[in-house]
Amino acid sequence: RRRHSGPLRVISPARRGQVVVLVTSEFGRTPWANGAAGTDHGSSGISFVIGEAVRGGMHGAPADLASMGRWDRTVVTTDYRALYADVLQNWLGADPVEVLGGAFPGVAVLDAPAATPTHAVKFVYAPSSS
Image (cartoon, rainbow, N blue to C red):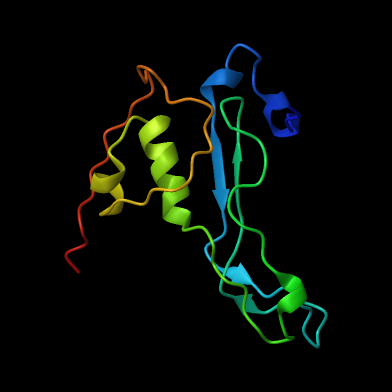
């Protein structure tokens, strides 16, 4: 299995097994260029999970670009909250239902859950009163 280790090279080899990085976009993009050679806001985006504990590869179904028209939006195939839930539960030792307000199964990006997370975090959510 091939893993991309570039981003982890700046981390001490003794600590690399203790790091998982989750990067996600808060909005999607269209797959086609617009008149200004850019892309417009779309309906789906990408996420990356990086670390030695991450199961490499693509998770979720790829977009079927061949069947799309110029202004069609890509279909969301994987809920980003399922990715968050996996990292919350299996890396941080937190209850994803408590943090996310619901269950979002379906994505398993970590090789194995942490047996006893020494890095467990207690999340407290307090809605804004304003």
